[in-house]
Image (cartoon, rainbow, N blue to C red; front, side, top):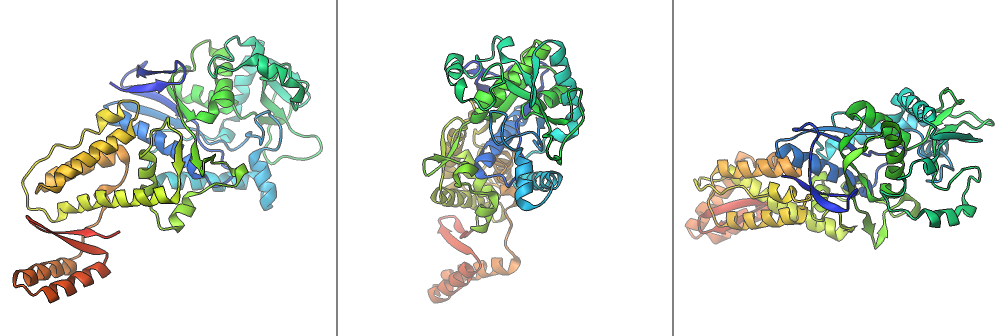
Length: 458
């Protein structure tokens, strides 16, 4: 039984499925106008953790994660430049080139970070017809209106508009005097289709029944989730910042059209802070995956750092915390290499990680369970099979690639054997000299009651 916190009900609930064991799940993907920062990666890794938990629970995720490559404006008030167009202008390129470069980068990074691949990764630009069709149907049902810059959704005609995010619409109405677009009927109305400017050409624009232009940001998710997953999702995921605008608007337009719930369960990951500030390109405090790798940290270290905090907590990033995660991962890897040097026959049941993750993805408790397991394992001469079965479970759930931790070569193994012989004959000077040579090869040797064990130093 999987229990998750449902933003819709503000309660931890049992996951119920429409067509078990299939889990139809949609997660909001990146806007591909720049390198993703670690705030993005924290959220995406938490998606992957959810998918791994579902699969380990004998369920079959049908996972769709979109790529936003048009329509995401610099302001949530449906104003400003398209983020891709702005980036293209700053680099002297066109928006299509920017979209392709960062889309390709994102897909490659999913592999680098050892993601389970989504079943579909649809792009907004590949689904313009679906979005136009969706808007046309909303128009036929009377939910839209036209003003000078586009076709808008009339939020006043969807009575539950404020429910999901628990918005205070009276307060928003009071602030309407500062609204950038005075022609909007209500401050909470949002663009479904934006008209191209008359004084310049856009790289990304299409003909539509209402004129040449491009889709609003929110419509793509509704159109693509409907196409690939049907009218009601089992799970919809995103960042907590999606709740008041993006997901609220998705719910309004989707449920206005289908008259069915957009999703049974909504899951949101909390913000990541650096120096007590939210990570944001506008604040200039972003850290990228490339920044992390340049400082010598592997993608697995970042993964482990993400797991150390609960997805609903306001997590903090620092280089010190990343270093601590690197040390922790080294401990796991040195457990992994014991399978290359064990002659034991003791079996230790794998750690009970899955039941912790089935309880609202409680990764801190899962890691605590793993630490308890490793403490027991330290004092036992485990069989190779016992070690590998535990590693397989850890890798399946956490994606840390511990089974890929390499063995050492025969020459280094011979050196370790020579050191053992030197210690046996009490030639401690030679034993120390061999230890020094091993350390130059990133190895140390632990002398235990059951024999010497080699480990990696870093």
